[in-house]
Image (tube, rainbow, N blue to C red; front, side):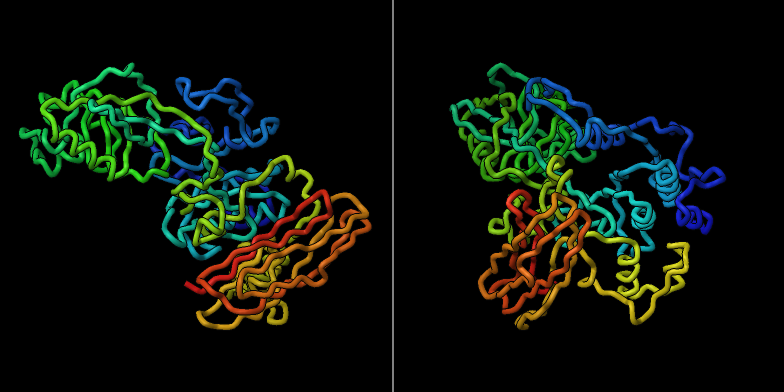
Length: 489
């Protein structure tokens, strides 16, 4: 990050000189034009037009649309064949701020635990000062714990949400037994049966890696084409299907897939099955001299447990604290309803001075703070804030094991709905905890009016993590804030 870039970002205007595209190669298209599909994908999520009768070869039939089809897009290209440079990221934020955008959507993840070593967090901070919301990627390193890649409180971290449908592909054996797998199979074998063979029984002995232990994974050049051609191949583990395709297979069944995982398309008829179902197919192959099978075209059906957050963004469980031991830490605060978000009733408002106090409370020095803010902001001991003081629309309390709990959160909410209006607090305390809101009734006489309240949590935990919520209700709007109390990791 250059000092010049920081200066321009601090002032919210475009840089006076062209910025280097240091990671662009000779083959890159040096314009906002998309070259690998990711930019188009992200843009369509943000503002794609309504497309009726959308499907993939008839699968998943319905209407496709982006978050706000009527929005206008400004596209800033920041990534190239060799990666994404911090200077390019900051220059794009700089240009977007100068252009007067309302929302910045950046589907890109970092890994720094230091806010001011993260170009996205820096850019989002300056966007926030200009009243621009930055929507960032939560990351693709789930379902492991503590893998969130974007956590600056002044931006909105967004995970990958699933649809309300699941896609299943059935494998039918010659003995008429069926097993349900996961994939997007657009190929129609028209119930035609094919011989089925285990990959480990068809090693390519002419290859340097031509052993049964390698062939069982069906990777490239591992299979004997003479033994595999025109057959369905059972493989151990996951791959992209190219090894089976180039060996001339009619289809492939892969075992080891978790049944709740995402579905993907392949270059030949394919289905992912659980280890248990795969073992049953393997037993069938070895139980007859002429084993056969077919792979049916994918069917879609409603998922009554939806919505989910995709496994690479979360834990691949329902968004329900009773079904997920990680509660909101596993799947976030919930899905946004774009229509209701236009009139939320109440908001937890935060501005730049609040975030600056928060950063001072996190240990950042005045010198470092000013190098990014570009103003005379100072970290004074009397004004230092902590994470608990930030006027955040959620409540998270970390405690030491076996400790009794006694903590007060102070919050201020602003009326942005009708007036006069009266909101009543509703909160259900988990076993062992006592949660009180004071005052529990707030009355507003005008739009923009602010009211403060305190949320007190007392008691003990009966498990490692508990989850509930505070809801302010005026009879029309329900303003929900998650509450999570957990033992420190």
